[in-house]
Length: 134
Image (tube, rainbow, N blue to C red; front, side):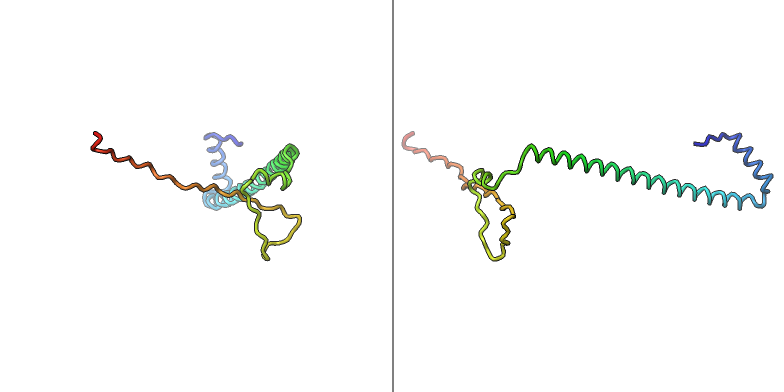
């Protein structure tokens, strides 16, 4: 950015002291500080807006890539018909028809796999040995 060394800053301070005068120098420095702060705020706002535009562009690009990848996967693995899925789930129970169930011919059936429940086996108890046989 700007490169100032100590000697250049001393010359600027001396010229400002002579031109502005010692009485008005603090007021001038306050005004300069105010405008420098405003300029920094505008620069920060510009940078934030630019960063936001870059993020939105990257997000749009990623969404396009995801959509293309999703389309590729859908082409490689077409959706199976419900009749092809039914044999894969032998324990699947179709949902019972009730008055609350919507009758939509286009809705895909919801299949839930039933868990296999087996009774727990108790550990085998040791058989008492016959004392007479010993």
